[in-house]
Image (cartoon, rainbow, N blue to C red):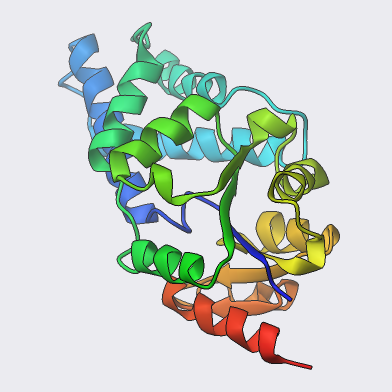
Length: 237
């Protein structure tokens, strides 16, 4: 019997397209502060994304480091390349842009509502700093929709380490086999969830991760498919 559904955040509840726009505007604001209108913000955004991706890949499954420090370091590496300084309030700039430009998947709010109508515990398990996820969810207007929010800051480790999943299950008061985890990363999300005994669902709207579908119990193109998966699992003998 499924009693809980947990979501990843970036790429699962909010779109990568919106995240890209957010990061582009972070870079634009940093360049504006530095007086560097001679630099191409899109080129620097691409370099920032590359540095950020490298740093976060190195943290997978490792002890928690504040994401504000990781993001600032990624921006610092790019800034050093071009001879300007990162503003001291870089994290505040980042938080403001995330609140302004973050974009939910079109079916996210309705999917959450339907899952809650089934009497399920609906939560989030995400690699995030607590202040970031709280501010972002409030800006999106869905902070109150979740019964629990578990971050890598809370758990002390990044996914796919078992700790974030185990802590979320403990907070919800459910067993692993009574819970679904929905994410967009076949390795960190699906494998991490399955390693603790949860049911894994991969959100892959454009089927771009098909070679790794085997890591996951279910693959969906939209969050609107989730209530049917829950019903199917709960009705099976």
